[in-house]
Amino acid sequence: MVFRSLGFRRPEVDPALADRTPPGQYLTDRWPVLHYGSIPRFDESLWSFRVTGTVETELSFDWAEFQKLPMTTVHADMHCVTRWSKLDNDWRGVSAREIIRRAAVKPETRFVNFICEAGYTTSIPYETFDRDDVLLALSHNDERLSPEHGFPLRAVVPTLYAWKSAKWIRQIQFMAEDSLGFWERYGYNNHADPWEEERFS
Ligand SMILES: Nc1nc2c(c(=O)[nH]1)N[C@H]1C(S)=C(S)[C@@H](COP(=O)(O)O)O[C@H]1N2
Ligand SMILES: [Mo]
Image (cartoon, protein in one colour):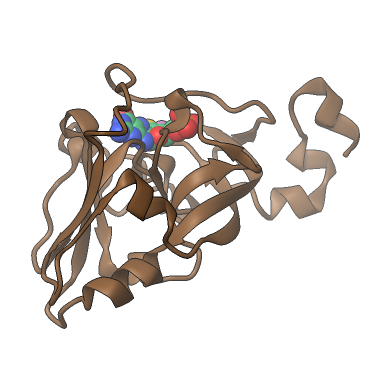
């Protein structure tokens, strides 16, 4: 790509990129870091990942157990509401559908809450979670996530603005009723479709 060396790409000169750039976004090859609060410290002996709520089988994994789950790769673009988009990310981790299958999600489930370190939460509709492009990622472009990008584990929901891709995730809670997340309580749009520019509510 001609413009890659400049650190940004130009959708206006490349129609293929324009088709992948939601309205009001610019492309960056850098990977900005964006979150509220400080980066949590990872303690392998204390870390756990839990799956709770409207499920037949609640799940709990320690760090060693989680890493033994089957892994898949998702190639996806990332769009932040602050207007940067980063295309062509390879995420590797445990697919949403693997979690759904193992927990045996109950029919009344309509929303999925991502619960993270330090109380950050964000929720998405169940039908947005039950897709083959959603995963719990351990690595990005063949490298273990760095602490600022969510190590050891983050959610990836490519079809929504990136505040729904929760870093430092520790729990998935399936729900019959929605629960507003951290940024959503500050006025971010709860649906968050970048193609519809659902930035604020
Ligand atoms: N736990 C947590 N996850 C979070 C956030 C946060 O504040 N806390 N911010 C979100 C926002 S607004 C964005 S744009 C992406 C940024 O991910 P990155 O820092 O890896 O680029 O993380 C999302 N995940
Ligand atoms: Mo963001």
